[in-house]
Length: 164
Image (cartoon, rainbow, N blue to C red; front, side):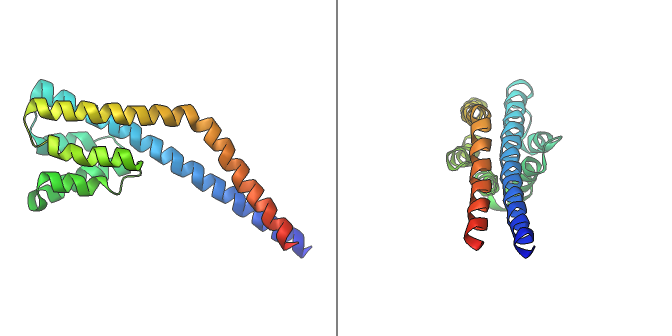
């Protein structure tokens, strides 16, 4: 009886791990999607309305998920003391993005301190890169979910076999 309870606990741990991995992947996709939408809005505001950066940061964080809102809030709060480029770079690091996309987003802070044309070019470049990553994740989502499921449950089954 004790072996069955232990086996059930190990399988439950495998299911919990699979759910955590799936939730983290959904979080990454949500952050990518919201970040792309916010950066597109920023580019439109710069191009059409020439909105100043402090007001633009407030607008960009409205109706976004917590990670993206925190990113824009952090940039806004620390830009005065650290400088805009440094604040942008430091705020981009904790976002749950792949390394290449985090690097591109970090470098965008330098482009946003320039003129309107430079800012829009930088924004469009980063938007395109984030969109490519978002599309890649959407295309491979089913395959990644199957692989993660197989890994979690076969690992749990192996652990049960080793313990019995």
